[in-house]
Length: 99
Image (tube, rainbow, N blue to C red; front, side):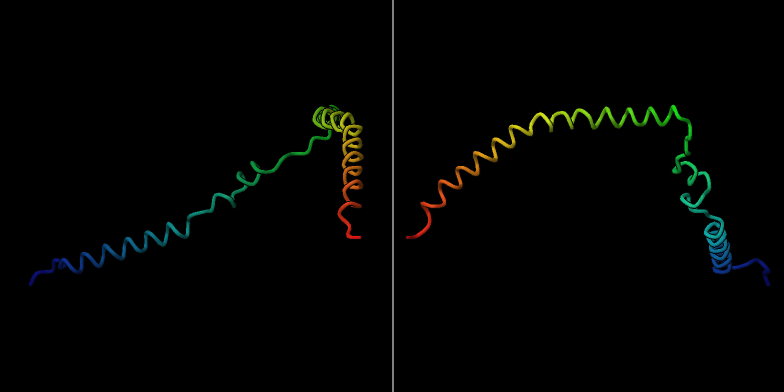
């Protein structure tokens, strides 16, 4: 009698080893998004310095002021256009009413 394992026994043993290895890997794997280094990389730090506040305010003003100036300069043209549109509507309305 031979004490050497058969091919089927070898296959079953190898399969069990791989299953155990996969289980270990699954249990030891950590999600990247749950690590503290990932969370710290996505969190911005507060900066209480006055200079940083002034730089931020200046940046916002540099974006907002040009748009505000353009809008203010266009208000008279908008009012004029609305008045002429209103005049056109008022001229057409009486002609379309049945008598």
